[in-house]
Image 1 (cartoon, rainbow, N blue to C red):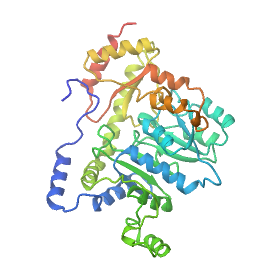
Image 2 (image 1 turned 180 degrees about the horizontal axis):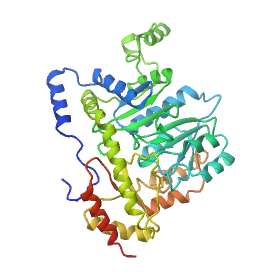
Image 3 (image 1 turned 45 degrees about the vertical axis):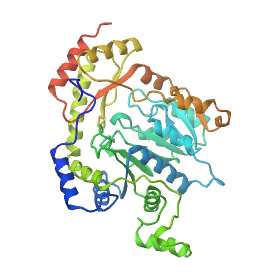
Image 4 (image 1 turned 90 degrees about the horizontal axis):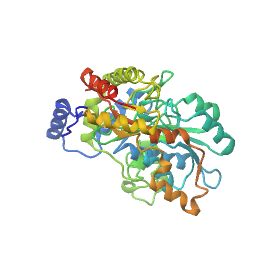
Length: 399
């Protein structure tokens, strides 16, 4: 149990979720991927406004499958190489997956306002790396990427979206997760809603959806619609149809109990998001009273997974962190900062044979987020008491 007055995360599994799980356990004899998973996928698709969704065991697994499916469907190595643009501040497994799949990628700078791509870096990448053909957006901490800039500089590129931290965020009224070929969401414990562990891949492309289904479950055809299964069986008459593997896949399935939790939480998601949006507006009002300490950030379309601080210097960051901790407010770095500073990326770049696999343009903004940024928690349980604690903590900062 946390001793913080304002912990990073709150227990989002309440009596309703526990009751739903117990009822399901008592009545069901199937707990692996089954009808509840399918029901949750359908309900999520309806909520987001897409045709298809695939439930998996984490957001990282969702990103892994999405990236591999994109490579399999759209890129023939003998014809066209896949080259991905990704921001320097994203999640570790995004970069790791690019490395593991031996996909060429360009790392670029984040924007200090919305945490997406800076326009300056997009211009530079367009000029220096015109072979980029996939834009992998990361909507960080609930803040939507400026999708107009993506379209302006890379109008012909395929777009995939990491929305793991941005359920319900929108850019100019359009929900993130609906702009590209596919998108991903995470239902980890501290996110907008939870299945404890879990993730979702979303798409409007039916053929792409069928590929995702196979990749989730070992590459097997078993979960495909009957007409699609029949096609593969006719093409492979010498293989037992019960164990037919058209693809080389993964085992990233989730289970029925996780889906039951998701089905219980999903009807409350819009309310959870509205509370987070209300909290971030109050937070913004507080930090804007201290321009000597903090930089402002984007609120437009922001669904606010957490409450981010961008301090004016590393020294100020240290003093603010100390004051918040002294007042019982738990803090974390700005995700894992500029990934170029992480040892697994450094070692990858130092290996001579990877010189053509990763390219980097200058990342001064990402360094600022790394050295001057951090965040505190945001959730549906935060209210006036916590905000008053925060005001006192910031007022006590001396520079």
